[in-house]
Amino acid sequence: MEGKVFSARDAAELFPPRAADAHKGTFGYIALIGGSIRYSGAVRLANLAACAMRSGAGVTRLCAPESLCMAIVPQILESTLFPLSDREGELLFRENEFREALKGTRSVAFGMGIGHTEETEKAVRFLLRSYEGTLILDADGLNALAALGPALLREAAGRILLTPHLGEFSRLSGLSVPEIQADPAAAAEAFAKEHRVTVLLKGPVTTVTDGAETLRTDRGCPGMATAGSGDVLSGILAAVAGANPAASLVRIGATGAWVNGRAGELAQAEHGDVSMIASDTAAQVEQAIREIRQAV
Image (cartoon, rainbow, N blue to C red; front, side):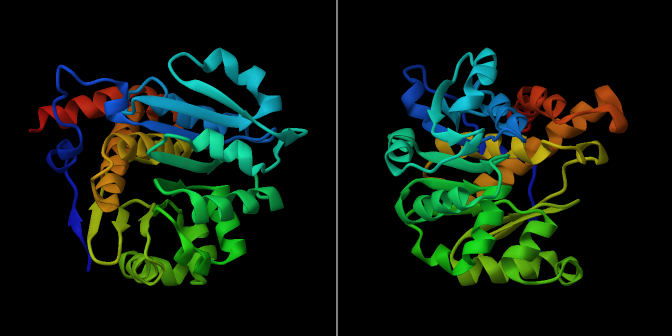
């Protein structure tokens, strides 16, 4: 099943007009968990897409290793900061901290720049078995899952959205990259159906599927081939999921991918395909959502 090409008009379903009596709780608390001493910028980029509420979340809780927090503080305006235990900039998993960080949230994105360690694997195991909201696994969250084995997905307490690129999906699925490239939709559909998750497989055309419904987004550009583009997407996805808890994960994934891809196109138009960086994409999220609203 190749899947329908998702449009701005389709995405508008998840950005409806807001009621006059709405408040921040209406649109959800979300958490973004990531960062390490080597990759401290990654979770900040995800936060940049969501913390200013550009993608629709009511409140964003940024969770990062404590020793990085002083560097992150200047970036924090609308969102809240939750320090996590660490050793020399690397996460130390503490179940009580995670339970507190996740309390009251509708969605959480985990893995952006967090590094692949045994502690990361402990965190992924806990999140899958305990978190009842929407869990978005990206980057080292996916690498940890591949090491633990995708069979763990069958134990998930909540809804799971995986956001791999080809290499990450190869490690998860056991398929080679050429095998995946031969029919990306079929590979993603088979994995999603077997493990009862939703897969957002990144590429020139992004495929989003739960094994029963498949959507494709063709927004994006070569300038997005730069560090941090996936981190921005994770922030957008967490916000859209938090604001739309009743929507299907396939629709949430396709909407987030459309917003991210269109924002990237706008960034490339301004900065060029060589010079644009991921924060340029994040800065265009607002305009991408304006275009979605105007498509109705």
